[in-house]
Length: 165
Image 1 (cartoon, rainbow, N blue to C red):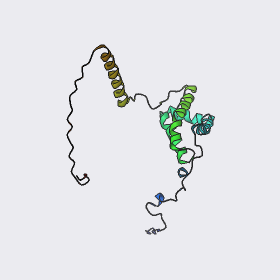
Image 2 (image 1 turned 90 degrees about the vertical axis):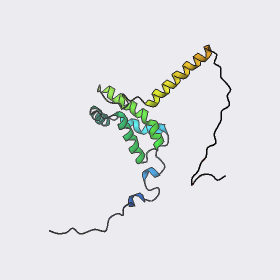
Image 3 (image 1 turned 135 degrees about the horizontal axis):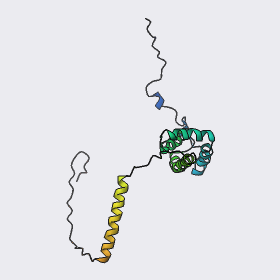
Image 4 (image 1 turned 180 degrees about the vertical axis):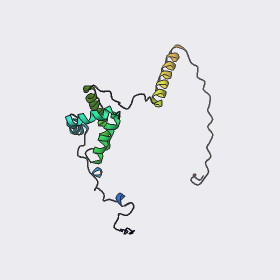
């Protein structure tokens, strides 16, 4: 049984994080700086027959369209094609284009936002409804507001970072 020779010609741990500034594609100025330029890059690729065929296969597997669109735009960010903010702005257009492809192929697909109702949306809707009801009640009923002085206690802070008096 032979022992494997130890090689000292390996990268140092963390060496991958110490690349020269600007050496990575995402550290350089993006190739497409506006939403229109980025869409002029994506839309011909989305309308390609080979891409559409592969997209339909993936959509039939049940992969959410939102995940696909996010993966596509994020890989372009890493390649330096556009910035992250442009990628976020083009996501709805990419999703709609993929939905169009799915609808044209007459397949069932998952968008990725079905059945997810945000608690924030519910709270906002309740607050707006409550404010609307209060505004209607104030119009019809006179509300008496008492002017009572409010006492504010001075907060005592102690500790290492407390301000000295």
